Amino acid sequence: MPLDAIIKINSVVTPSNYYLPWQKKTSKPTSGSGFLLESEFGKSLITNAHVVADATYISIRRCRSAESYEAQVKAISHESDLALLEVKDERFWKETNDVKALKLGRLPQLQDHVNVVGFPTGGDGISVTRGVVSRIEPIQYAHGGIHLLGVQIDASINPGNSGGPALIESEGIQKNEVVGVAFQSLSGADNIGYIIPPPVINHFLTQYHLHKKYTGFPQLGVQLQHLENESLRKFYQLAEDTTGILVTHISDVSPAVNSLAVNDVILSVEGIQIANNGTVEFEGGERLFLNYLLVNKFVGDTCKMDVLRAGQRISVSFPLASSSSLQLVPLKNLPSYLVYGGLVFTKLSIPYLREFEHEDQENWFDVAPRNLVQRALTGFKESEDHEITILSHVLADDINYGFTHLYNMELEKFNGKKVKNLKHLQELIEDSGEEFARFDFLDKSVVILEVRQVKERGSRILRQYAIPSAYSQDLRAPKTK
Image (cartoon, rainbow, N blue to C red; front, side):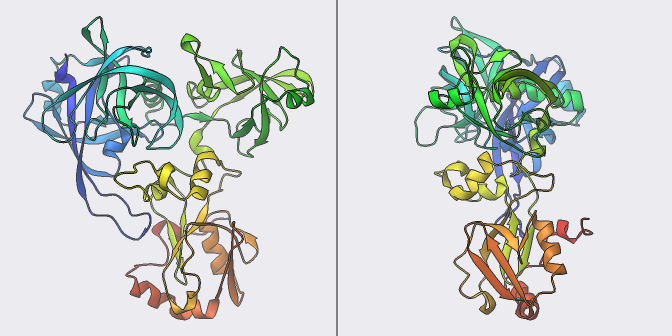
């Protein structure tokens, strides 16, 4: 077994505090695994994004080596939970000259035997865990929350294993082909782990080497509805031998906004027929949701579709845009906040939702407030400056008495004007000449503060709660136009 290519990663992470965004959390040590991968782009050092996210210091040590080297993050994808590391110390690369790096293999098949290699917690030595591929389908990646192709195996992925390779075994012989990167397990279940498969790994590597940065997976920015009901199909004039999926909404910033229309029925994507439940045929006769066809393409690629519009079959095409340009709730951002009269407003983000995770409940989409999770998983931008501003919590004071029970609420309006984002809220507050400040929330709750009292008590509230400023650094920039 090619153990010399396996890397132990030690990090010191200093996470931002998204609940108290004017603070940093305490630094703590973490560990994970990685490996040297040889591809058409040369030799790479790959691991999971969550192993090195928020790292202020990273050191690596190759299996069977006593030397540790400092490393830096070269590229990171919070969507696919992958990261590339670089080591500037030439001694490391000289040390690996004679090391046989691993190669990226094929997508594994059901019942394939794989060995997960890494450095799980509980010891300093390398560990090998054998498992069998039991399922291949899009799954929700815990780190970013989006659905990408994943491979389920009947072997545990323990803390510290993350980032290590899953190596294919053929007829009892171990090969040095990587068929996945270990990254998560199923909470509450024994011996169920998941690996990131070669198509996702290759997509990440190709993006970086094409653009010298991570550009994200393509996304449509449309809402779709199944057409499994016979009356629904008749209404939209689908013939008995025709299948497809209905377009019910299109974002104004969708790359398809000038090509698709509401009430279109998408019949095929890239010549591949779409079933009435929105799935397409996959290897081995399995079926996956049509999104699989999009995430295999790259930002800027042309997407071709056949659609049924008012009973007429037409063809459309458009360039694909990055998911980050459509993502309503960002996967990663620095904390941003505004404190007004003790009301703490912030931008909804995945890191904010991760604040609700616990040791025994590790997936934010299972434990965070459902209203916010729903926005994160299904929402997309309706304009370029569209963000979700939330009331995180209330710092108790006489002027906000009666409102301290409010928290995790989406803000809709300030003094009757729709709030676009946190920066816009700041500008509305500063430009308001009203006697009262009225905040209307999506759940129809209302908070009203007297402006005079806020001005008189604002500084005292900040001092009382040891907050250095009423605004985060990004909100102190010049006004938007």
